[in-house]
Length: 130
Image 1: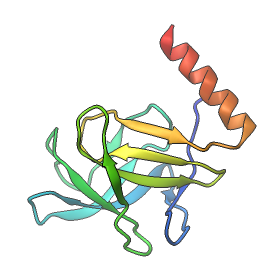
Image 2: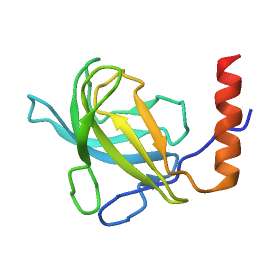
Image 3: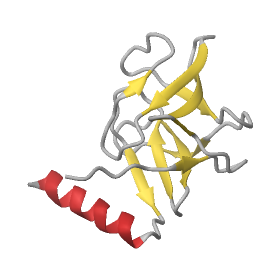
Image 4: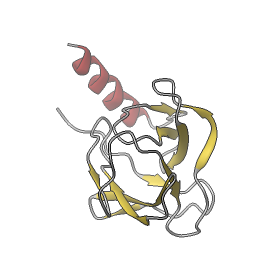
């Protein structure tokens, strides 16, 4: 099955966030002074990360744009675990809200306008249900 790669950008400065095969964001762990650059898989439904240091499961982080430094946290909470969410824009239109808790699969896509992306997303979701 083809994979849906999400091309993302900062909702504030509009800079592209993908570097090579990763979406790169700056993070700060809650209750911890550690900061670093985290890599997220750009593929929808792929939860792999490239952490800058050990991040324990269930840890909550704050995510920042590596270009302008904006805090990407938004109002609202994850429907699965009640942690904060952060927002990324999709370069083709739309947004993705992502849970800030390590190990939580909570995320939501919205406002996708590209018909090819919508078809691929629908196909992905149908095959995941089978």
